[in-house]
Amino acid sequence: MVIARAKAYMSSANLGSGFDVVAVALDSYWDVVEVSLSRGSGSVALTSVDGPFAPHVPRGSDNIVVRALELALKVLNIEGIDVTARLWKGIPVSSGLGGSGASAVAAISALMGALGMQVDRLTVASIAGLAEASVAGEPHFDNVTASSLGGLVLLLTSKPPILARRLNVGDLYFVVSTPLVKPIEGKTGLMRKVIPRTVDLSVHVEASARLASLLYGLISGDVEALSRGLDDILVEPARSKYVPCYDVVRSYARRGGAVGSVISGAGPSMLSITTSRDRALEVSRWVERAYRDCGVEAVVKVANIAPGVEVEVGGDG
Image (cartoon, rainbow, N blue to C red; front, side):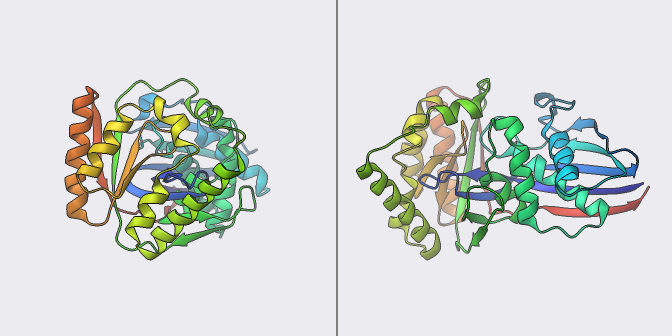
């Protein structure tokens, strides 16, 4: 029996005006999936779920790990094996931190490692993004691409085959804050439904300018441009009312020296960006104070940009 395991880090998508096309992998949290192969008829089974957030994910066929493995076998025309998987769930669930995407990326990458197949990381991201439709209601590829490739990524396409580039963003530090609130049922689907479907041309032009500002700021290190690009005018205004302490976190983080703060993915987590570790530590203290003043319990972590998915092949069992 061949065994392999893969570790995939959390991701924060959108980054303000970069809705569905910009995401960053961060080292605050991660998932690990172990895959065992044996000869068989193509069945997939998830035999255990452990880790700090294990109680919050399904254990049967509804788990994203099973969906991702089944889809990978189908898409890559892999036959004649049974797959057994184990999940260590280290990313908070339904928190806007790309947890389902990381699980899917880890599962597919572990499968490829166990099979000894050389599959590029964008293909892994493409399959993982399609598998996420079972959780989000529709496929999306920003989180999975960041978890697969690592770093800060820019998507050049919105559907497979996925094209993406990693951006060299220099010295950026991140504060990840997650309010400990009961998840909204069907949160990802809801948070996509509240987004405006049509906008005036003038709004579109301004939103495009904000995205251009975001990308220029990330690439050049221009703090003024980055700050403007983080201030979204389309998606965040519609979603902010569902995010506890949104305005207070943004205000307090600024007082601590943050370039800007954004909703992480579909929330309720938030991400504050700084240009030094010392400043990130100061911002984290201000963000903790913000949640206290709101009467909301939260976990706040200083994060670095994370590498891509890591695979270890354990050999025959």
